View 1 (cartoon, rainbow, N blue to C red):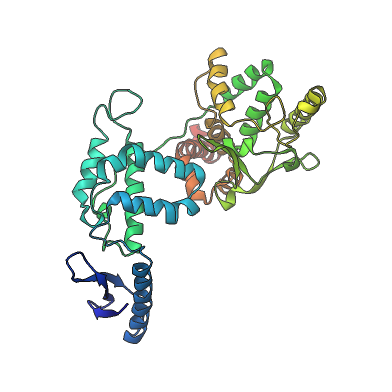
View 2 (view 1 turned 60 degrees about the vertical axis):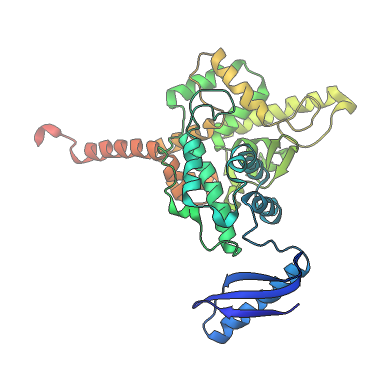
Length: 396
């Protein structure tokens, strides 16, 4: 199959391949414009020849789709298969497919990929603000944060289309992303934590331990559910985070690596919480003996009645009912993690230590999420320094 190369710009080349005949008897001609890197013309041409060879192979293998005929829907299907399936976490992929199937593709899927303009994306984002767009039947449009998630997904996919040289530029880059008010993590203050701990006294040991471990270690829910007894060191009072358990419809319960590499961490725990874990282990061992052959020894700390790992949503569903029963202010189970971090900040703990304990990839993430607590701690610091500098204010 013959092919040729035409120079179009400083780093731009057009690939031309002839092959086969169309219904009208005329020879088919395939073209593709590419951008290459190279310090010299010969280096650039060498790269262009490599791309030409790939281009010919795509045509011969019937895997090439002309950009002028490629719809956004067809591109998304290719993106999901060639990239997303192997590079995204299962929960992220599930959420992306949900956004694509329910809203993005019905609105934009019919458009040719190379014909998508900024106005198309802008109109779609504005549509998400309208009444009756919600699938839960509630009035009003989607939240600004949810709309921004849709924008980011569209932008990310179109950015890959640019990298794959299917389109010359990303139309989503030419519009401003939706503005979202700065997120302030919900949490309990010190007095509310004391009330929470007191209310736990009458609860089952399993739930008591789950709340206390989360408060003490600042774990994500998936990390909590992924804990095994092998991860607990009672001699050194530490727990090791090496995995997370999650649940997705159609996939069921599964184990994965923590959110990031820095999420794998060793956390020192208060002795009192470790004593709780010891007591809970004894209780679980008694249950194991009672169940006999019905018990499946999975090694997990938080299990169902038969020893199999507990579903992550169990604690999420139990927690609001528990708070309501004891007349406590509503927060989510995940916000126990925020409470843990806030307590440490207010206690004057180093931000790097807090970031490492939470498993954040950098301190800026910690500072952005907990800006409210840091601001409050800074005010306390100002009051303390004032007490040092002006111990006797009447003398000034």
